[in-house]
Length: 143
Image (cartoon, rainbow, N blue to C red; front, top):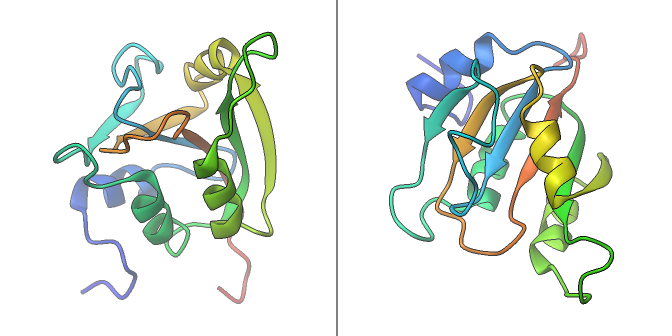
């Protein structure tokens, strides 16, 4: 029996094959889940319905399941009209001690297609720019 918060068998199996430096993409409902990742990336579908499950809900369980070293977020092109992206503030609230970096949309897509990305989690997240590319950290001896 498991003690951790995650119980999704496919997601747990995929995480078990991801080691330090592997990346996990928590993707919003608008993300191209099949073509926006590499061919070896495993798709975990948690997008039951629009808004269910959202990226924050998945992140809350994931951060209690694996060590998170760093994250990359998708931002608009600098030439685009500036917009507020409230979900990014929520990401930073959930991961206050994690280093964040920003990538424009097409740079983010390129990063998500990297061979380092082994898992893409399709969520029902409806908010724009609700994508989070997570780098798996190292488990500390006391964890």
